[in-house]
Image 1: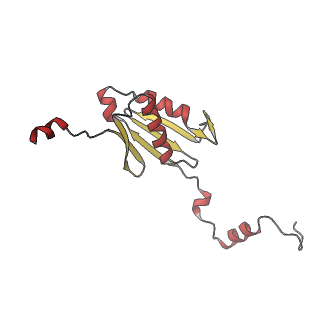
Image 2: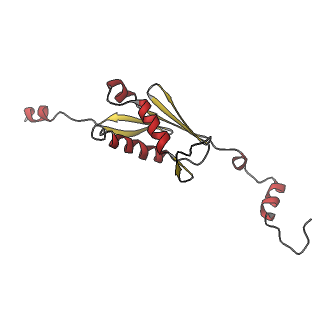
Length: 139
């Protein structure tokens, strides 16, 4: 029971609920799904998708701690695609950062780069290198 003179902590929240102004997004958990397509380098045999999956599992931080995925973040693999599902706030940019870190660790950063091909996915592609010898022969 709340006395008339004492202010309640949740008065604004209770008043908004009574008016029906609470949005549905506040009640529902947001699930982010991201994919990283590694099909080009995996098909060529220069990269292993399972080692990339293990790298992500080891390096993704949840609440500031690595190895703390729990049930909030899930990492799985479908052939050459790595799928990341997060029930917490999760940035697509963070996946790009980790992908670049993996490529640098495997010394593949000189040949591959991470490209966003849709709103929720990245793709590992080769750099497009123009043939310099052919350009010199034309001069």
